[in-house]
Amino acid sequence: MPSQPSKDLEIFKNPNPGRDYDIALDCPEFTCLCPKTGQPDFATIRIVYVPDEFCVELKSLKLYLWSYRNESAFHEAVTNRILDDLVRASKPRRMTVEADFYVRGGIRTVITAQHSKKRKKTS
Image 1 (tube, rainbow, N blue to C red):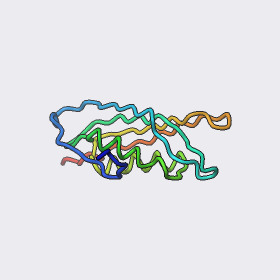
Image 2: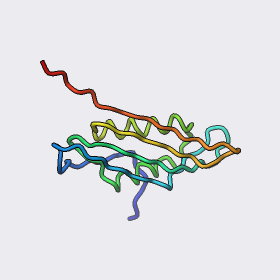
Image 3: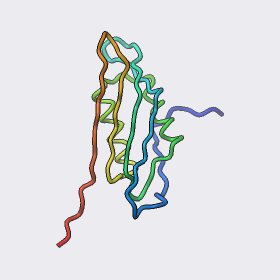
Image 4: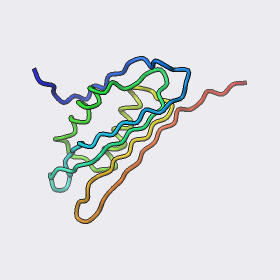
């Protein structure tokens, strides 16, 4: 049976949780629908994060991004929703989601949303 879109993000244990390192993901085939016209909006989603205890499993990320294909969303809202869902699932130390939308009506939109984990205070 072929894969289907899904909002379920899977994670796996970080193989090096004691070290800060960047994971950079480029997803050039993102599509959602314009809430004003119903036409498709195309974007490259770039995700850069420093994992803590968990990493995002890539096939589930692909299916998650695919799930937006038939949803209406403003660029700002969908970018922040993607960040919120990824942070909720993987609890990274830091994460940035950049949505670089293709030109529409002569305007190119790039939205950047960021998350940084609060460090526990030590006495």
